[in-house]
Structure formats: C-alpha cells, structure tokens
Image (cartoon, rainbow, N blue to C red; front, top):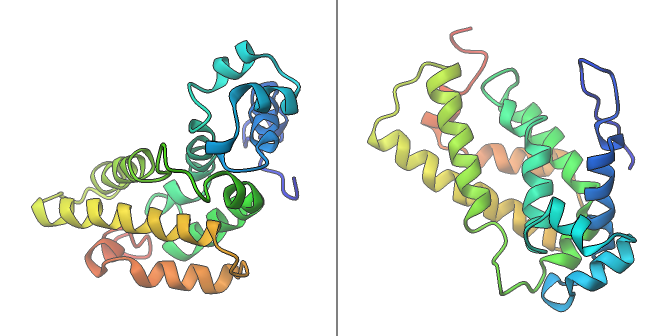
Length: 196
C-alpha cells in the first residue's frame, strides 16, 4: 500500500491490524469480475479458509462496498464536519485510487449485485443527513432531503464509473468535477468556512 492511514490515538497504521490485513488479502485475491469468481477461488488465492472469509464478509459482493465505506470515514465523511468539500474529495479519491485495479476487475461486469446502487448511496445519504443535523444544525426540510438523496446516488454513480473506466486518475480534475456536482444549497450547508 502506497500510503499509511494512522489511528490518531495509537499512531498505528490501520491497515496493519490483523482484521484489516485479512480483509485486504481477500480484496487483493479478486483478480476478475466477482460474477466469474467463486468464494473457494478467492479463499485459495487469499490463503484463508471459507470460515475466515465468512467471518469478514457475508458475500463476495460485499468486498467492494466494504472497502469504499471503510475508506469514507477518513475524509469523505468528514466533509462539513472537520474539512471542506475539496479536501474531502481529493483525499477520498486518492485513497480509493490505490485499489483502482481491483474496482476495474471486480465490478466491471457485475450483474448479480449492481455495485453502488443500494448500499453505497444509502450509507452516503445517512452520513450527509447526520452531518447536516448534528454537526451543522441545519434543519432538513423536504427539499434538502430530496437533494441529499439524489446527490448521494449521483456521487456514487460518478465515482463507480470513474473507477471502472480506463481514464487517467487525475486527482485535481476529478476533485473539481465532483465539487461542481454538489447542489448549491447542500454545498453551502456543509461549507465549513461558513458559520464557524
């Protein structure tokens, strides 16, 4: 891994914990579309038992969304809490791009569980609403609820498309593009330079 994420309390590389090492070895064992791989193949390539696999994942289709949601906690979920939109997007994309080959291979043709259409946007929507209500004290009316719901789907779909594509990873351009998609009302509500 080309970067190190540390737990601020213990100063340990969080990817060096036994639990995370196992999950990452499972993720790295995926070398083609999840539709074309069996759990047995993944376990063999990761050098683990099926029991170990199921201790970490309910399904092989959980692997991509687990990694994305895990990585969200460091930057993306902090937008409007401790960092601004641009910083959050830039560093979130930077972390995810370290495993871009995994996303290209694993979810390119997945038809059984369309990646990002349910779990990912729902998780993002929950975090955005919590940030608005708890961290920013913004009343969430019908329109804001609608903006958050639609934006969560759009943001996830754009990220999914990028990571499955062959486009060069240009962190600055991707960050600018993502920031431009944020509805103005939501952008302003989570702008940490306002009302601080």
